[in-house]
Structures are given as C-alpha cells and as structure tokens.
Image (cartoon, rainbow, N blue to C red; front, side, top):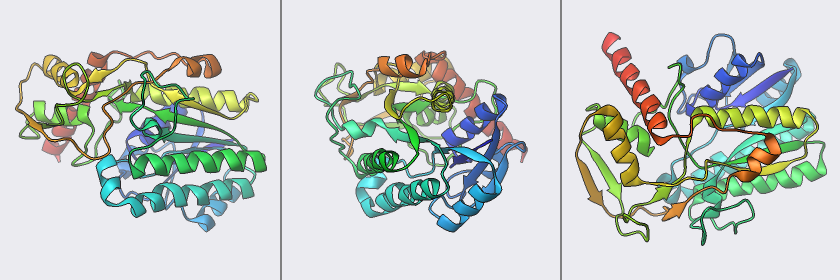
Length: 330
C-alpha cells in the first residue's frame, strides 16, 4: 500500500516524505509547487505535479496507486496574510480540503491524517491548552483549519473514513541529517528568520509586539521540532492501521518560549549577534499558546526526542548554512 502526501514538496511535507521512506513506505507526492520545491522530493517517491483540490486528478491517483492513507499538508499557513486575504485562505485551506475528503470517501480511502493547527484555540484563557479548550480562532487561517476539522469529523461519521487531526504548535528546525529544511523565500517563521539574520541573510529581525501580558512582553509559543512532528504522523498512521478510532490531538511539547527567548537561543547557538527592532503587534497573534500535550502520548504512544530549543535552533541554523553554500555553488 502507498501513502499520498499532499504538499509533499513543502517544508513539513518534505520531512514527512523522508520519514515515510525511511520507514519503508511507498509514497506518492502531490504538490502544485506554488510554495514547495521539486528538488525537495526524493527520487524514491512518486511525484505528481497538481492540486489537492482537483477532484479528477485525485480520483485518477487513487485508481492507479494502491493508496490506503492520505497525509494532507497542502495549504496556506501565514497568519497575517490570512487576515488580508481571508477568502483566499478559505478557498485554499477549506474548499480544497473538502474536495480531497470527498474524493477520499468516494474512493473508499480508509485513513486520513490532517495537519491542523493550535490557531484553532485563538488566545486561550489558560495555558497549557488542552484539546477540550474553547475553539475561538483569531484569524481566518485558524478558522479555515477548524472548518476542515469539522468536515473530517462529519465525513468520518457518514463514511468508512477514520482520521487523526493533529493540531500543530509552532513547527521549527530541520532534518538532523541535513536532507531538508525550511527553504521558502521571505518565510515568516521566527526561528528561520532569526537564523537568517544571524548569518547575514537579513539585516535584522523585528519583534511584533512587546506589550503582551507575558513575563517579557513578547508572545509565547510552544516550539516543536519538525522531525518529532512527522514522527507523530508515523505513530498516527500505525494507530489507524491498527484499528484506532478517529482522534483530534495536540502536537507540541507543553513548554513555552517567548520571542526574546528564541532570539537569545539563536544568538547563542550561532555565536552571532544581529540587530533586533521592536515593532507593533500584528493582527491575529495571540499572546501565549502552549500545548497540553499528554493525550497524544497516551493515544499514539508518541515520545518526542528533539525537544530542546537549542537543538531546534542548531538544526535550523545548519540548514540555513547549507542553503547559503548551495547558492554559492550554483
């Protein structure tokens, strides 16, 4: 059997493809390359350039490949962009996911793993936030992912489709073996931006908001290493194939770090200083959000292995150095 990975040429998706191949799985990647990179997909995986919202293409893929599971990463992920382009985010994240879920139900694909987000919680009243916390997204990005969660829940009840929706907290870092990393130009991920600033790829870094009700006034997030994250997906796949029921689970460590904490970690790991500018808040940013993370371990047996901020920063920095070397050699 094969696993279909939508968005498998992107940041998280490419790490997922590597982990699946490492585990001996047959992999089919579907990506329209709007933000992903063809070179990020290993030759051992079958690559199809196309859109996850193309029903006819999906049905052909299901017909010609022995696919028993879908891992759905394709979508738009920049919170401030979702505020200025809400309908674009609902189209890309919700409408296309509806098409994918419908095609999966029609083709009787039994297992579906969805990359959701902690943004569904908005600005939680208490931290850590558990899976039963109120769902009050602050941005169209968070709402667009929540809509897909609801569609999966209802489709799972109506069809023979079992799913795991993983609510990611802040994903960062890179493959420890240097095979993939965050490569998008003008990325907004804090760890990547800080690493680029440390290596002179940016003139500095802007902190968005210093007056939040947090110990140092900057936003607090739960940073999870991308390799641990894709490991949770492998555990989810084994769980579903073993007869597990549908679940929605947080995917984080349960430890929060502020923006200034991350900047300090990158400076320490890189041994480089860089300018930091203090700016106003951005729309859609909660003050603090940290995962209540016990349930995923109990249900899936997931155990993180790279849950140190300096490890995350170090792997991200190594990837940025490789990108610089590759650009110089080309």
